[in-house]
Image 1: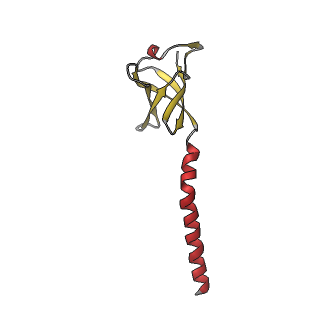
Image 2: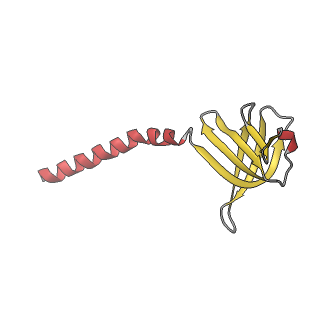
Image 3: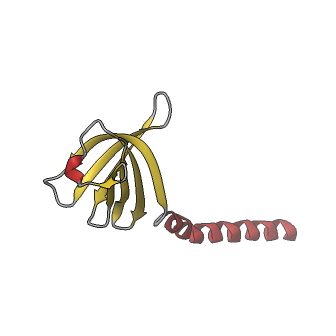
Length: 114
């Protein structure tokens, strides 16, 4: 009987530790850099902040859509040449490197395939 109680106490303690650590696991994903390849489905030039939206395939019937804020620090390249966001058109293939932050998703590098 005593050993059964002790087991329950340990289970409850482990559960509480995991619950308390959950926010730390979630924070670890923020600030992480991701890179996707896909097709531009939207570029917002007249909106502040400016955005790029990329649809990337995950499989034959699945896809993921990433919308990222474009800042003055975002590198936008066509080949080796730097270009502006207004040079990118819907339907173009791109590599998008972005980072998740508390403020949202920020584009670090947009590389347009030539």
